[in-house]
Amino acid sequence: MFNRRFAYILVAALAAGLGLLAAQKYFGEAPGLQLPPTRSITLYPQPRPLPAFQLRQSDGTPLIPGELAGHWTLVFLGFTFCPDICPTTLAQLSQAQNRWQALAESTRPRVLFVSVDPERDTPARIGEYAHAFHPDTLAATADIPALENFAKGLGFVFVKVPGRTFSQNPGDYSVDHSSGIAVLDPEGRMAGLIRPPFDPAAIGEDLEALTQAYAEHAPKRR
Image (cartoon, rainbow, N blue to C red; front, side):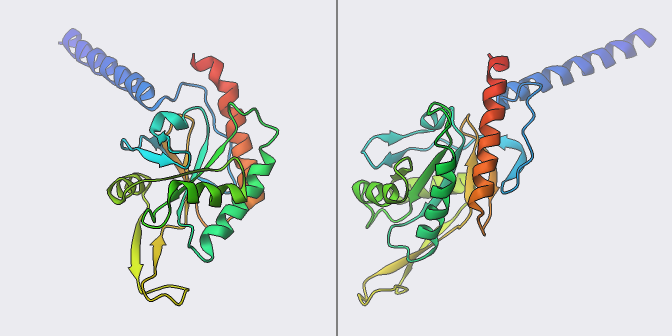
């Protein structure tokens, strides 16, 4: 009876161990990786993979999950006709980006501006708009279904609001959208969130520290 009970316990322990190893492999977190405390970012207890997506970058090339690998990435939804929140946020992020210029390009954090107004925002337009704030900013868009799928994966929403406009053209419209900034880890997973109001210095400091932590741990993960 003792031996049988011991065998059950051993099998259960082995199964639990295998489950832990599988979870570590699935989530890519090798033992020993300790992320530093952050001032501006709410990091989730466990990063979660994003659903498959495909956006179109300002240069016309596709943006797929693999394109974001190797870098911490800050994702902000907006549109170029936005009168206040979008330009203010991109200007604040550009201050953080200036802090990262000394980091190696291969690991330097990225900022991705995704336009949720494809009716008016062509790839060329969003590229010109984003690069006016910082030349390193990535810009992308897609059709509405693809954008909705991408936004949902981040926990964000957006909606077209006809009639609410800051111009004199009655046919114009605005787009309500989530104002937070999604934080993707170097494996392209949703790792955290930055909520307004934004502190550029804190964002810059946090992303520097997170980049360094992953870079130091990378050799142990191979």
